[in-house]
Amino acid sequence: MNISGIRLTNSPLETSRLGKKFSRYLKPGAVVFLTGGLGSGKTTFVKGIARGLGIKKAVTSSSFILAREYPEKNFCHMDLYRINKKQFMDAGLQEYVSEKGITAIEWSEKIRALWGDFRRNKKYIVNFKILKDNRRKIIYYVPGD
Ligand SMILES: Nc1ncnc2c1ncn2[C@@H]1O[C@H](COP(=O)(O)OP(=O)(O)OP(=O)(O)O)[C@@H](O)[C@H]1O
Ligand SMILES: [Mg+2]
Image (cartoon, rainbow, N blue to C red; front, side, top):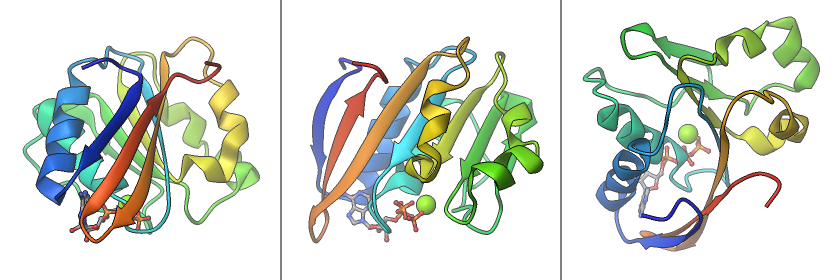
């Protein structure tokens, strides 16, 4: 799989499998900025990433939890739905983006300024769009491209 490009999926299972495949490209320090509307498949994709990293625990949507760490696999799953940049900084969430681990950030378009941060980390943007019913369009970018 090329790291930039467009994919279509037709079920949640296909989306999580795509996340699992994508996880193979993620090296320590990778930050995955997930964007796209409610129910578009971000958490489903992150579940696949987590599975690919060997995380056995269930990954759940974290809209009420700003950051959930899976320290045994150096993985952190964040959700910015409810916060702005000031709250992000005040909560010290930038500390969770490490150079050793992998970070997946849902609703990352809420704090677009973050896309330019973390200069020493490899960054990806993955955008989700509902086409209809169970069909989703997933687009990979590398910020700055
Ligand atoms: N192709 C598909 N890929 C992913 N999810 C799908 C697909 N088709 C249907 N769905 C459904 O869409 C929903 C996606 O939910 P998910 O929690 O992954 O979205 P999300 O983008 O994280 O939403 P939120 O903005 O609330 O965090 C689930 O109910 C899932 O069953
Ligand atoms: Mg979600």
